[in-house]
Image 1: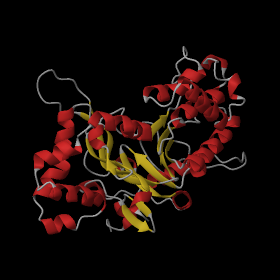
Image 2: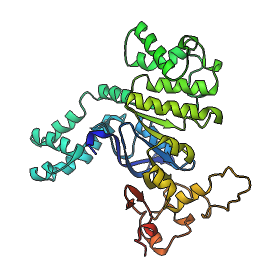
Image 3: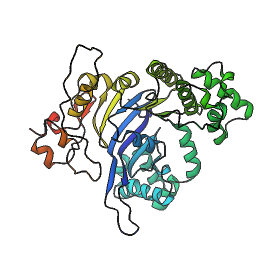
Image 4: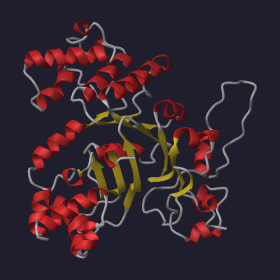
Amino acid sequence: MQTNDVVLRIENLRKLFPAERKIFGKVNLFVHAVDDISFEIRRKESLALVGESGCGKTTTGRVLVGLEEPTSGRIVVEQEDVTPLLYEDESAAKRYVRETYVKRFSSMSDEQLKSLTGIDAMYAQRFMDLGRNEAKFVDELLQNRRERVWQMRRRIQMIFQDPYESLNPRMTIFDIVAEPLNIHGVGNLKEREEMVAKMLADVGLTPPETFMFRFPHELSGGQRQRVAIARALILNPSFVVADEPTSMLDVSIRTGVMKLMMRLAEEHDMSYLYITHDLAVARYMSNDIAVMYLGKIVERGPTEEVLKNPLHPYTQALLAAVPIPDPEMKRGEPNIKGSVPRPINPPPRCRFFDRCPYAVKFCEVNDHPPLREVAPKHFVACYVVSGEAS
């Protein structure tokens, strides 16, 4: 696989929210919404992020599009580290560059720097070209930061879950879809009208002239979601976060919207992070699947492989809960116990320990297991499955 085929790479991403308020003193309680997750998405492919409500799926998507600041970790989009662009405070962006690159590069020899690969190699070469001048390196990585933020927002877009809340009821469909063009200064009025008309036609709202000057309340739920998709795609992004875009729609029109998104991904060379709790939708929409539990990815791999051969007990429980369209068949309860624990300062052991039917003492006394490759491209975070607990 060529490195430039990877549109998005997330490395050790964390997002913590303070669970207490203190005017003076240090905050000690945090909600671990996203806790040290890593994955990558290739061009024209999609990754489904699945799990029950509250596991951190939506927070992951919001961090990627800049609606939340990451606590730590690195986000690389098309061979550019966009993480420092996600911090509103420039001092936080500088601190990230120093901790991620300067501190590490300064302790390495030129030979060690030249042996680095991927995006690290590119930044290491620039560090050497600048004569290891730390101040110049930091300034160069953050130069034109505001302009680069705007460029990043053109490349990454988001489709929100609720089409009834994500569209401004006081704006016409034309104004809603053309708003990204206005913000980024793309084209004149006539050109924008042509672009909006073409995009509305692409998402199946035809003839577009009959929709452009309606208001959201005049459209059905499926039509509203098509408008939301059109708004996300009008800037021709390379990556789209789709946060359960069909969960608010009737079953009868979900398939049409999913087919539309797959066709547009092929035509526009886009990649998706598809957030969902519906495994059937994940199977239809994604090439790969990542199962998330309490801020951690516990299983990841090709969609068919994970669904046909689930190895983590939580993945097995999710599949066991899927209803079977046969009234004669009866299925027992999923083989897990208890309920989801609180995500506030969870213990370092396996997040699934308290509910796992296979947990042993080794799982309790060791940190949360890392993802191990137990089959080709199939990764599982479980000491028992990987054989380390035996």
